[in-house]
Image 1 (cartoon, rainbow, N blue to C red):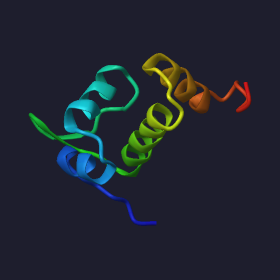
Image 2: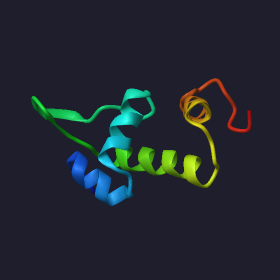
Image 3: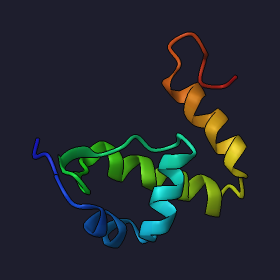
Image 4: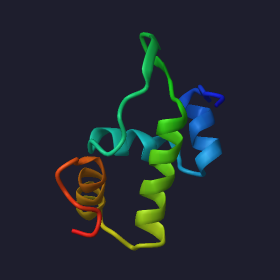
Length: 85
C-alpha cells in the first residue's frame, strides 16, 4: 500500500477543508498533529486524510457539533466500547 505524505496545504486541497479549519480540528484534539519536518512545517499522511474526511462527514452530513464528533472519534478509537454504543 502506498503511503501518502503531504503538507497541510495539500491536505486542505485534497479534503476540501480550509487550513484554518484543519488547525482548529488539531486544537480541539480531533486531528493529531503532523510529523514535524521543520520549525513551522509538518507532513500529513493517509490517517490524517481519512480523519479529516470523517470529521467533515460527521459535521456536514451528520450535522454533529464538535463535542459530538469528539465523542464519536473517542468511541471509534476505544477498544472497550462496542461500535453501536
